Image (tube, rainbow, N blue to C red; front, side, top):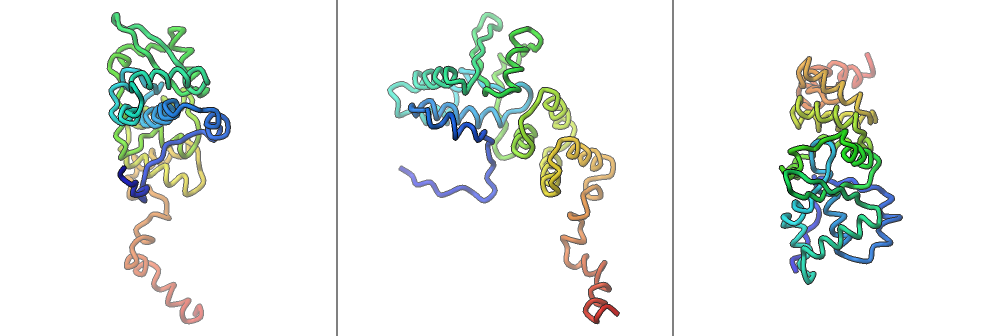
Length: 241
């Protein structure tokens, strides 16, 4: 067994509700169920769009998950057992759809937002259409997407917010979005309206000019800082004269 070298300094994180640890985890007795749930949380929160889900086909083709189930007598059987147990426990939501004569098994995290999404799909109000057949791909783990940033820093998504995030993600560079979230968190302004105003200001004024004063060149460049404020430092040094 290869020893784990430790988590890197700038590792990305997957949000997991606290109630999972207090209520769900103590009741799980099957390692396959635990691995399946944690992997789905990781996969779902790295996806774009609304609603976010995984399919059984997608999970069966995932080398990370299936590799982690290799100790079982049959990894596919262990996957299906873990999915069934998670659905019965109420951790996951299961939806079966038929598209072009093919059966698709969809799995959602059992959140209020996803319960609403499943209800809208079942009523025909929300049509996934070709999205199901396309087997949505997860976002590369090196760059957190806007949905993951929102849930990590603000809270659970609503359908209305999800649409606004989707529009913002198609409008602004990913680096701007991540920086805007960081600035809002630093200022303890954890709401999407504030973050969207930051992005709008950067688009109108240019990002270098639109950043808050705490991020200006004068405060990050010592030479520039002294050029601008050196006379004040000298006055303070000589007793305020």
